[in-house]
Amino acid sequence: MASEKKVRQSDNDSRWSSMRNIITFLYQPSHLANLIPTMQCYINSFFDTITKLQQENNDDIAFSELSLRLAIDVIGKTAFGIGFSLNESSSSKDHLNNIENGSNDNASAFLKQHMYSVTSLKMDLSSSFSTVLGLITPVLQKPCREILRRVPGTADHKLQHSNSV
Picture 1 (cartoon, rainbow, N blue to C red):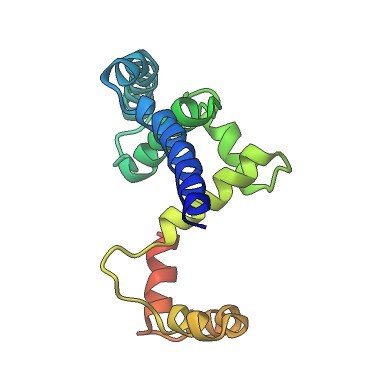
Picture 2: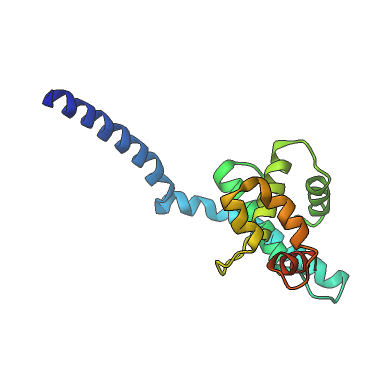
């Protein structure tokens, strides 16, 4: 019985060791150094987009949206090998239109859900009533949120107003 437990433990240890070795490789300085040219390419595209937006109009630039696109581009390419090219000035509008119009491909669905998640999160750990209600009874979250969005002074109304601006 004790030897059987040792065999199981050694199997678990060897399995964990092999998994750890795979993950550890990703954080090695040599691997991270290989990612620099990829990130530099996206950063250059990011600055080109900012420069183009400054030349087109003298209004404020939505830096939050641009930096979100940069993060998605870099993570998509370095972690998954998928080039979304959201910050490329010629294609960013096309990508965003595909995302907003509900394109059926997996990348657009992922981006739509990711952008929704990032833009709707609150970082101060306070929540609206509908969010708390959704934790208790998920079925009531959406109808409650729709009602509370119309009531001035509620967190849902403020969140709707800040997201629409």
